[in-house]
Image (cartoon, rainbow, N blue to C red):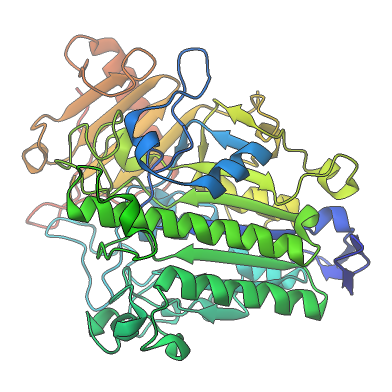
Length: 510
């Protein structure tokens, strides 16, 4: 058994691959809370994530619009990353977290429409619309095998209706509350039954019948349920992994009445005010979870990882311009930085200087990490924290983030990121490849995108907000980046868009 309150663990757990048993100490098995917010970008918070030339956080107007005191508290206790990349839409990112693989490798490259295959007119015919099906290699599956109680609360969006991946309990979770194939709630209001009574009944949130007809906002109902599951794990005296994945702040932009008065004089549109209330309600949820961990006496042995699943969807302006994520360009579903970057904070729920447990995963309180991180990194990081080895034969694209939790750079880490999107959406049929300060965007079908060019090339050190396309003035750099991008795609086994005859459209070198 694992004695959580005493900080001691004498459990015998199965090794991550079928090679026998290994003993795990408490330092190898802390509790882990993954706090995932839907559609939250790095500017949707009062915590500044953008870094200046000196590597220090710099505030922008949106940081003064949003109210996130619990995020401020968490950032003060841990490390925030100035650049943290996700895929530009939700299902690919959520599958990256489950597998540790880039979307180009796991082939869930588009958000999953629950009822039908939405590959788009030129998308790969055999992309992984059904989602990942093998619980043996998923993050919760691995943790459950190692003795963790694995709990899912909130939005899943792992697979379509009728597939095993529709339900988180088929992917390694012991508990599932609220998770199904839907990518958005039918309603945020308890009075609507979250879609069961009124609202979009085709997207009604499951498992929350006890709140139907009440004035309990969806974010609050999920928080109550998440806290109850934490309490149950403590009662059972087992380490736990909680994937708390809020439906907020995804549309519909229903105003949370608890916070509406805070934004009525903001001068922003009603839907943008509603979006801000969703942010504030999510933040209250974070604060309540942190408080609950302290009340139960397990905060000092609980690691909290906070992030969004793609860029912001704040309704503040045109999709591809500098509005919703200002000063970053564009929003969710695009190939610009505002579509790809999310907030990320790692912290102990209660930092304690003399904790042997925390000494195994040291996190510098109030620190800032300028080196990039990615959603693929969560898989190897969480497994490493739990003392679990990835299953033999399962290829992992992520990097263990623990060396970066001190705020220092990991010299072994390559400064590169690949995002491949061979489908139609806000930005369509593109690949992004970043290496060091250079960022390349390749358009398979230039006419399908506002830029209407095949190549976009940016130097993010000199032009972090992507205003100057250097593709024509830096031909040698463009050629080198294209060659590197093609090599990355091939190494990941990427699938490509197809033309009207069904032939693959491979990248064209300049």
